[in-house]
Image: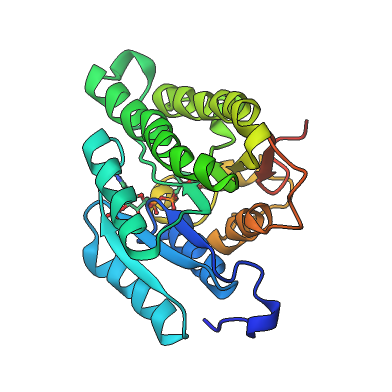
Length: 254
Ligand code: NAP
């Protein structure tokens, strides 16, 4: 990666927290925000070497980043995460709620643990991070919260009752919080990816799925990151809040 020349960096001086940034979409988002000059907190759950590699890539290009372990489905760990960022950089301008898991199986086989684990991270984690960071953003009177939802939350997907319920929840949450925070200079939007090439989808790719993607291919993490970067940039997306943006090759057309 290469940082943009300083005069072109749209996020220079801003601080971003990206949850689940050790790989996949989160990694691509962390790099994309760093290229624009943001200081990036690279959160992860257990892949410390991968998170360190993301940080090393940003630092080698002349940017600033730090890796922070935290299970964002846990209140105390989220509070620790935000306080470490505040200690080091003193502000948080951008929160990207990206961390997510799947525990796919059909409803009749789905155990309560499968349901709960996905709801705890993919929905409650978004609530916990948004709540902790919005306290800081309210004092700053500015901020950008970007939640990674999914087409599964819009159109459903067999085997993903837990996941699609969580992602539909994220979309409702995004709209409500956008209304609550709008008068304080904080925007809240969601990005709904389709099938993106990451560890999460490596076992589910098939020719059958491609039939449902008008553009006829899977997406790349960088293509989702491009939308996140647009929503994070000050001037470009200042008048956009409470919206869901699909990056899905045309799977969902409203
Ligand atoms: P991924 O490659 O599996 O990466 C998941 C990331 O989440 C990793 O960095 C992982 O950290 C982190 N994570 C897992 N549990 C965590 C926890 N409890 N606390 C903090 N971080 C945790 O997934 P992805 O495909 O990039 O997906 C990223 C987001 O996009 C998810 O919200 C997913 O639902 C959404 N999405 C993905 C697709 C797709 O096709 N890939 C489509 C629609 C939506 P460790 O490495 O430490 O485990």
